[in-house]
Image (cartoon, protein in one colour):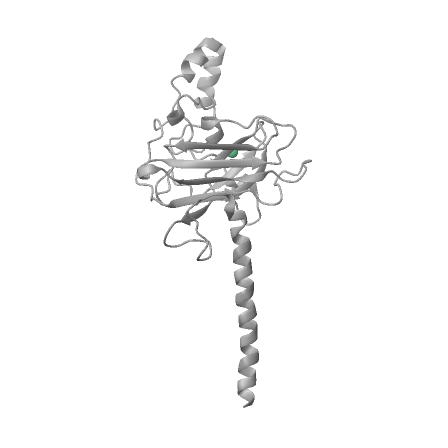
Length: 245
Ligand SMILES: [Cu+2]
């Protein structure tokens, strides 16, 4: 239906298509603004060591998308950093995809973009009307990555959510990084981080600042885990010694 209407408009003329694109929105309308996002809650997706794409790269793209609840619980504040970008194939794009990355790392399994309003990818997002875009189309709304230099961006997105159960929730979804032709280079799951309460990080390593410090946090965690293992390893020896007495 959608495809046929686009073809029909193309036949009528480019001006009709442009006129139509001004009114593009989801089948369910524009994306709603999110409220009640838990203060101190965040989520981060960090690209893995190895790329999913099997073409020629000088190592995988490095980087992350980190997010936290906006001021007053309104919308989400994002912080994005990518480096080691391919020398060609840009401008690069990145999105929140609807499904998580399975344990085999297959980025195809993340399916399409977070798109609660059933908008679809085409026509492309008009960044001057972000509410009309797919919620997960972060680079469409806030800028593609031009060139291969390290890229950073911060932006506020009113349409994604950290309220578990909200349709716009992305804490259980994934980040996918693409060439401009949409080929999937790499992907990663979002991990929820909370300022208080449950956290995937070891006690004492403050996750209050949701940022790439996560790259050092797991190292600390591994060190702590190692010392725990050491202590546990000594315990049976002590027990055996006591048994001899
Ligand atoms: Cu994508």
